Image (cartoon, rainbow, N blue to C red):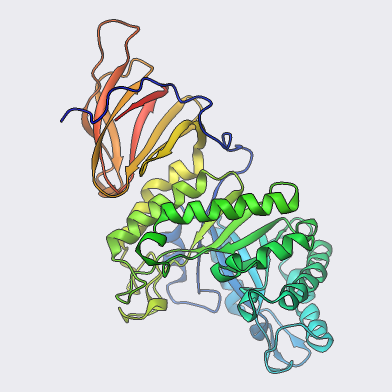
Length: 434
């Protein structure tokens, strides 16, 4: 089939913004786990996570597990086993300091002096015990659920963050601190804005977000609408802070449940690939933790049972295989916005590692053909990895056609659909026609 439009013959330098993502900090590929309280499959699960390219795990350090009797604090043996296995696998971590304790106002949030003082004792104990073993501490989980639009709720959280961050800095100075764990509702009702306006960025190293969109309707739940919404939040927070605000997506995913907010397993896999690549295009997004590693149950109609990359028997879902295939690009390649295009439901994202370049390309909606022109002498097979079939690895999908005249470009035509293709470009840049 002939290309749908005449050749545009445009080098894409300078046409798109923001500028190329800084390469000084690797993008974090993470997952949430529910393993800190023990699992007979702990070693195997960490092995599977590592094989998928995951380099950070997020776990709750429940206050209730540390203080089993008033004033008596201890680190559970299961936590030590968890950390030993994680360290053996050389995997980073996020530790969430969170949730109430039955001995203090019946699990109340630390918003009053008696509960806040007891929470501070817990924080002091845990951060001393784990000092040197934590990459990120996250202060509470989804505090905004109490009242996402209530200023008193955000003000009390700011007070908690200020106190807790000071404790962490004293006890574990090399660890970084995240605040927020802000839900989608909190993002739409100004919770994040009020934190930034209140000076939270002066006390922590970044904001953590949980920007789920799986219940946003068919159009709103796609990765493309998600990144557009998240980009507007990113820009607004930067404006409010007067400087870039590092964003850590410590929970994000789509469930494979059979209820209205769920998607089928192939759609989850496609969404995962597109979401991770799109997150990488925003310089302020420093990493994304898929929620979660393994399904929490076996009921196909229960949403909370079906977020995992693995089923409960550890069988991989398609999303797991896709993450394993794309992780090397996410971890090792730098996004170049100046050589990328996002328009008309077509996504052509350029990533580079030294002189080697790849084009990550997909089309939303109907499949379409795209003609790619390389400004180098690309010859032989066109090598691509199709995330629809990641198990096949890199395969040839055609030939580069190179005119005899050296000033003319080599070209190829590739059919794109909603599963990204990773197209090898060698050391050539590319031009785009459709």
